[in-house]
Image 1 (cartoon, one colour):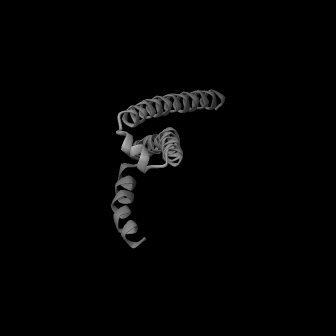
Image 2: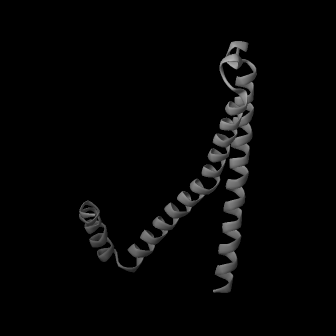
Length: 112
Protein backbone atom coordinates (compact mmCIF):
# COMPACT_ATOMS: atom_id res chain seq x y z
CA UNK A 1 0.00 0.00 0.00
CA UNK A 2 2.84 2.37 0.83
CA UNK A 3 4.57 1.64 -2.48
CA UNK A 4 1.34 2.37 -4.37
CA UNK A 5 0.95 5.67 -2.53
CA UNK A 6 4.55 6.67 -3.28
CA UNK A 7 4.21 5.77 -6.97
CA UNK A 8 0.90 7.63 -7.19
CA UNK A 9 2.43 10.70 -5.57
CA UNK A 10 5.40 10.69 -7.94
CA UNK A 11 3.13 10.22 -10.97
CA UNK A 12 0.91 13.08 -9.81
CA UNK A 13 3.93 15.34 -9.35
CA UNK A 14 5.24 14.51 -12.83
CA UNK A 15 1.79 15.15 -14.33
CA UNK A 16 1.41 18.52 -12.64
CA UNK A 17 4.98 19.52 -13.50
CA UNK A 18 4.66 18.56 -17.15
CA UNK A 19 1.37 20.40 -17.61
CA UNK A 20 2.73 23.45 -15.80
CA UNK A 21 5.75 23.54 -18.09
CA UNK A 22 3.50 23.07 -21.13
CA UNK A 23 1.14 25.86 -20.09
CA UNK A 24 4.07 28.21 -19.38
CA UNK A 25 5.54 27.56 -22.83
CA UNK A 26 2.20 28.06 -24.55
CA UNK A 27 1.56 31.32 -22.68
CA UNK A 28 5.09 32.53 -23.51
CA UNK A 29 4.59 31.79 -27.22
CA UNK A 30 1.16 33.40 -27.12
CA UNK A 31 2.60 36.51 -25.47
CA UNK A 32 5.32 36.74 -28.13
CA UNK A 33 2.74 36.41 -30.91
CA UNK A 34 0.51 39.06 -29.36
CA UNK A 35 3.43 41.44 -28.85
CA UNK A 36 4.54 40.91 -32.45
CA UNK A 37 1.03 41.58 -33.70
CA UNK A 38 0.75 44.76 -31.61
CA UNK A 39 4.12 46.10 -32.76
CA UNK A 40 3.13 45.74 -36.41
CA UNK A 41 -0.15 47.67 -36.04
CA UNK A 42 -0.62 51.08 -37.63
CA UNK A 43 -0.35 54.17 -35.47
CA UNK A 44 -4.05 54.86 -36.04
CA UNK A 45 -4.84 51.69 -34.07
CA UNK A 46 -3.18 53.16 -30.98
CA UNK A 47 -5.02 56.46 -31.45
CA UNK A 48 -8.36 54.67 -31.34
CA UNK A 49 -7.66 52.25 -28.47
CA UNK A 50 -6.65 52.91 -24.88
CA UNK A 51 -3.41 50.97 -24.74
CA UNK A 52 -3.46 50.43 -20.95
CA UNK A 53 -6.89 48.85 -21.06
CA UNK A 54 -5.90 46.81 -24.09
CA UNK A 55 -2.73 45.43 -22.47
CA UNK A 56 -4.54 44.70 -19.21
CA UNK A 57 -7.16 42.69 -21.10
CA UNK A 58 -4.51 40.76 -23.04
CA UNK A 59 -2.56 40.00 -19.88
CA UNK A 60 -5.62 38.68 -18.06
CA UNK A 61 -6.69 36.61 -21.08
CA UNK A 62 -3.26 34.98 -21.35
CA UNK A 63 -3.33 34.20 -17.62
CA UNK A 64 -6.75 32.59 -17.96
CA UNK A 65 -5.55 30.47 -20.87
CA UNK A 66 -2.44 29.43 -18.95
CA UNK A 67 -4.45 28.40 -15.89
CA UNK A 68 -6.98 26.55 -18.00
CA UNK A 69 -4.32 24.58 -19.81
CA UNK A 70 -2.33 23.79 -16.70
CA UNK A 71 -5.13 22.63 -14.43
CA UNK A 72 -8.21 21.79 -16.46
CA UNK A 73 -6.52 19.78 -19.21
CA UNK A 74 -4.50 17.83 -16.64
CA UNK A 75 -7.62 16.99 -14.66
CA UNK A 76 -9.51 16.00 -17.82
CA UNK A 77 -6.78 13.60 -18.91
CA UNK A 78 -6.50 12.17 -15.40
CA UNK A 79 -10.25 11.60 -15.20
CA UNK A 80 -10.34 10.02 -18.65
CA UNK A 81 -7.46 7.71 -17.74
CA UNK A 82 -9.19 6.69 -14.51
CA UNK A 83 -12.44 6.01 -16.38
CA UNK A 84 -10.76 3.66 -18.85
CA UNK A 85 -8.82 1.97 -16.06
CA UNK A 86 -12.00 1.39 -14.06
CA UNK A 87 -13.83 0.02 -17.11
CA UNK A 88 -11.01 -2.46 -17.72
CA UNK A 89 -11.11 -3.47 -14.07
CA UNK A 90 -14.89 -3.92 -14.23
CA UNK A 91 -14.59 -6.10 -17.34
CA UNK A 92 -11.98 -8.25 -15.60
CA UNK A 93 -14.15 -8.69 -12.51
CA UNK A 94 -17.43 -9.42 -14.34
CA UNK A 95 -17.92 -8.65 -18.00
CA UNK A 96 -21.64 -9.54 -17.86
CA UNK A 97 -22.40 -7.01 -15.10
CA UNK A 98 -20.26 -4.42 -16.84
CA UNK A 99 -22.24 -4.78 -20.06
CA UNK A 100 -25.51 -4.49 -18.13
CA UNK A 101 -24.21 -1.39 -16.39
CA UNK A 102 -23.11 0.20 -19.68
CA UNK A 103 -26.45 -0.66 -21.31
CA UNK A 104 -28.36 1.00 -18.47
CA UNK A 105 -26.13 4.07 -18.54
CA UNK A 106 -27.76 5.70 -21.59
CA UNK A 107 -31.37 5.50 -20.28
CA UNK A 108 -30.21 6.77 -16.91
CA UNK A 109 -28.47 9.78 -18.48
CA UNK A 110 -31.53 10.52 -20.61
CA UNK A 111 -33.74 10.50 -17.50
CA UNK A 112 -31.36 12.80 -15.68
